[in-house]
Image (cartoon, rainbow, N blue to C red):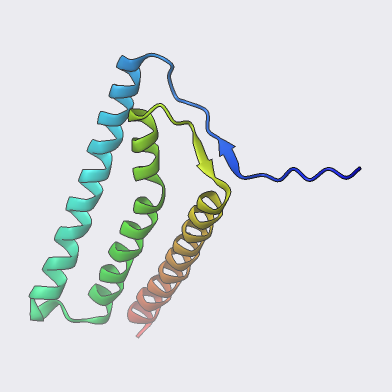
Length: 126
């Protein structure tokens, strides 16, 4: 007889078991998420609207803000939803997608930071 069980979901550990601490967790993560959205949104709109900022360094800064929005939007909303609901699981496909997108955004951010550092190096040397 073969074992035909398969993994369909992962169980997540809660930060706290009491409802008041879960609300505090939700409020803290909501504040951090909204601050990141506001800050990156301001950078994006400022660089996009002001034509004097259409230089390579501000182009890189715009892309860095977009990548930061992508990476924070990958994990934080699920954590906030889990802190308010009684569900403590994530599907296998959801976990794989979240991990794939998070690694993609982080790798793209590291590459962009490397390109930005090289751009500053060239600007200083010449």
